[in-house]
Structures are given as structure tokens and as C-alpha cells.
Amino acid sequence: MENGMKKARIAVLVSGGGTNLQALIDAEKHGELGNGQITLVVASKPGVYALERASMNGIASKVLARRDYADIAAYSKALADTLEAAEIDLVVLAGFLTIIDEQVYERFPNRILNVHPALIPSFCGKGYYGLHVHEAALEKGVKVSGATVHIVTPECDAGPIVLQKAVEVREDDTPETLQRRIMEEAEWKILPRAVQLFCDGKITVKDNKVYIKGA
Image (cartoon, rainbow, N blue to C red; front, top):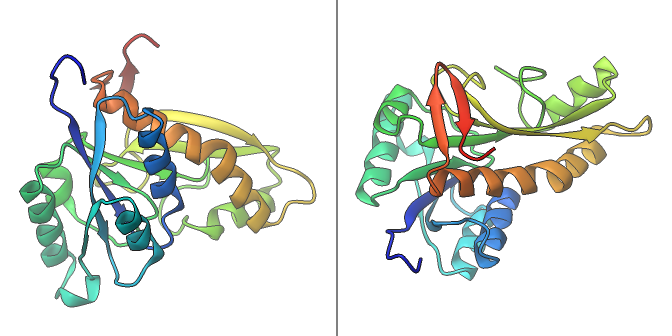
């Protein structure tokens, strides 16, 4: 930035294709991550397409395969060590499906963001991931669903909410069509926006609530 302010270094954690990673890469190219810069992609398994996306865009990447570690504690320590060694300021979970423990949260307090494909507190918590979220929403017959970006805490999907965006549910939706619409209309918009707000120092957390400067 012109004022010589140090860029906020972002690590994106992935387990699959990396569509949300791509949304963040595109946002950075368009100057929409504010003072943020993606400097590392960490994958929980080798060979996922998200690693290709990182490579094509000149972003350093690392594979930390869960199967290479004895337990969640050993994996979490290795992940936290990797993030600290890379001097990461903000961690973004973008379809990261590997369980991590409090070691990561304690070393990056209020510095981990996750995007969830529903309007929390609906359809969230243990077992609600991927298509399961949209199956549950359609089963309930909700008229709107959407996406939520929240700060990650040890309790699943319970951290302070940063941004939410509603998306219409149509009567002929399948879990797949609803998933796609929520990604396109909500996730890919509010995740880069939340990252920008964080990197520009606009987010304050107090009493488990997020306050956005200038909102």
C-alpha cells in the first residue's frame, strides 16, 4: 500500500477443489482484499485441485496430510507451527474438512475465519458440512438459506459472526443446485469481503460479537 503499511499475510486452508480459494485469489487480483495478501495455501491431502490453483497463481503451498500424524493434537501442532513459521496474520478455512484442536485457536485468537454454507445458527455444528447442510435445509422447507463467515473458536460453527448473506431457496432445488447458488451468490462474495475487513483493521470482537468499523 502507498502508506508503506505492512501487508497482512493470509494462509488459506483447503481439502478439495478450492473454489473459495479461487474467489479469494480473484478478489486479490481485483484489489478487493484491501491490505491482505495470500502468501500460503495448506492442503490436508496431496493431489487436490486447490494446490494447482495455488501453483498457477504463484502462491506457496504445503501439504500437511492428516494421515501422516498420530492424532489430532500432533496434526494441530504441526499446522500451528507451519502457520507461525510463515508469519501468517490471518487463517482462512476454505473447505478445510480436517479437525483441528485448540492449539491452533490459541495461537491465532480471533484470527481464523471460516465460511459456512448456511445462515448460522441454522444447519450448523457437528455433521453439517458439504451437501449435508443443503439436504437439511431442503428437508426443512426453508424459503431462504445463505452463507455465514464467522471467526473460528473451539466450538464448531459457534464463533462470532462477521458477515451473512441470504439466498433464495427455490421449490425445484436439489442439494447440488442450492449449493451452487449459495456459493455463487453468497460465499464467493462475503468471504473476500470479510477478509478485506480483517486485513484493513475494521473488525473488533467483544463479548462474542463482531463489530465492524464504519458499518
